[in-house]
Amino acid sequence: MNRTTLSLIAGATALAAVTGFAAVSAPDPGSAEQRTGAAATLPVERTGLLCPRPSTSDLAETTYTSFAPVTEGADGKGTAVLRAAAQQSAPDDDGTSEDGKDGENGSADEKDDGDEKGEKGAAKDDTAGKPVLQLQEPGKPVTAEADGADAPALVGTADGRFASGWTAQQTTEVAAGTGRGLQGVACSAADTQFWFPGASTDGSRTDYIHLTNPDDSAAVVDIELYGKDGELETTVGEGITVKPRSAEPVLLSTLTAEKQTDVTVHVVVRSGRVGAAVQALDDETGGDWLPASADPSGRLVLPGIPKDATAVRLVAFTPGDADVDLKVRLASPSGLITPAGNETLHVKGGMTAAFDLGDLTRGEAGSLVLTAPDGSVPVVAAVRVLRGEGGKQESAFIPAARPVETRATALDNTAEGTTLSVTAPEGDAEIKVTASAGTKGGTPQTKTYSIKSGTTQDIEAPVPAGLKGSYALTVETRAGGPVYASRTLASTEGGVPFFTVQPLPDDRGMVAVPDASENLSVLQR
Image (tube, rainbow, N blue to C red; front, top):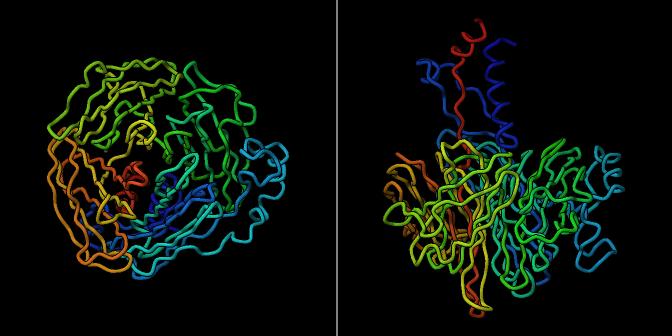
C-alpha cells in the first residue's frame, strides 16, 4: 500500500472518530480537485444513527421518521435502515418496584454477565434486529408508528446515496400521566462523551439517561452527577455495561440518594461507544427529551426559545475548577440585547448553577448567547422552557447547539404547528430552506432568507405544494454566519400547549478529503 492511500485512510479514520462511524471514498485521481491540488469535498458514504426508547407509558403514540436529502455527487446505490434494538432492562420488567427505581442501573451482577456474554450477541429480545423503517429514495421521508410502552429503541445504518445528511426523529404524544405532552428527539450518532445540564433527581421528576449501543461488543459507561455543591455521591454509576446492539435506560434517582432540582449529567464511555439522551418527565409540567449540550466552550448559543414562553430556566456547568461570570445576551428580532437583572451569571467551577430568567422573550423570537470572558472557561448549558399557565403548562428543553455549518434537517413537520427559528449572532447570513416532498404526497419547495447579524428570526418556512402527511425541512448555510437553528412542533390538547423543540446541528454529511499530493509531500519530509 503506498503512502498516498495511507494518508486518505487516515483522513477517513479521523472522520469516523468525530461522527460515531462514517466512511468516505478517495476522490478520482483524475478529478479537478486532484489536478489543482485543492481538497475534495465529498459526501460521507456510511453513517449510523441511534434512537432511544420513546416511552414507558401505555398511552404513548410514537411516530418514527427517516429522511435523506438529495446530495450531489453521492453514490447511486445504498440503503438506510433503522432496526429495533434489544431492550437490556426496562421499567417494571425486572420484578422490583412499580416505579422502576431498582434494576435499571447496571448492577454488579448484570455487568459481570455483560462482560462474559457481551461478545456473543445482544440481550434476548424477540423484536431485536427487526427492520422498523427503511428509506426508499432520497428526498422523501418515510414514517412508522408504534403505540404504548413497547415501542423500541432503534439502531440504524445508512450507506451510499442515503448516508450524506441522513436524519431520523421520533415524536411521541403522551395523553396523560407523568410526562404527558409532546416529546421529540432527533436520533444521534454514537460517541464517547456527553454533557446534560438540566437533568434532575428531584422527587417531582422522573429522569432517565438512555444508553444505546450500536456495536457487536459490549460498551462500559460511567455516569457522573454534579449538583449545586459539586459532584454527587453515586452508588452504581460506574462501570455500567450496555450489551451489544441493545438499549439501557438508567433512572438517575437510583444512582444517588441526593434529591436536587438541577443536575448536570456527564456520561463517559470507558470502552466502545453509545448514543445517549436524557428523558425528563415531570409530574405537573409534562416532559420532553434533553439532548446533549454542545461541547464545553467559552461561547454558547441556545437557539429558538418560543416567543410565548412563560418561564425560562437556564442551567449551566463548567467542568473545570475555575469560576466564571457568563455574559448573557438575547438575540431578538431587532438585535442583541442584555436581559435586565441578568447581565452576568456567576457559575462556580464544578458546580451546577441555575437561573430563572422569567418570560425572557416577551412575545418575540429569541436565542440565548452566553459568553465567558475571553472565552477562557469552557461551559455547557441548557434551558428548560415552559408554555402555558397554572395547571396547564408543558415543558421542553433547548441545549447549547452546534452551528449549521453546511446543512441540517428537521423532520415530522406539518403545515400548521411548525416553527423554524434561525439566529446569526455574529454576522449577517443567507440560508436556503427546502421543504421536502410529503410522506404521502406533495412537491418540494425552496426559499432563501437573509438573517441579520445578532438577530433571531422565526421564519415562514416553505410547505410542500399539495402536502399530504409530514415533511422534512432542510436548512443550508449559503453565506456568512455562523447560523444556529431549532424547530418547534406545537399542538393544543385539552387546553394544554403541547410542544417540543429540537436544535438543528450540522448533519456532517460532507467531508473535505486532503489532496493526495499534499499528504505525500508531508510524509516525505
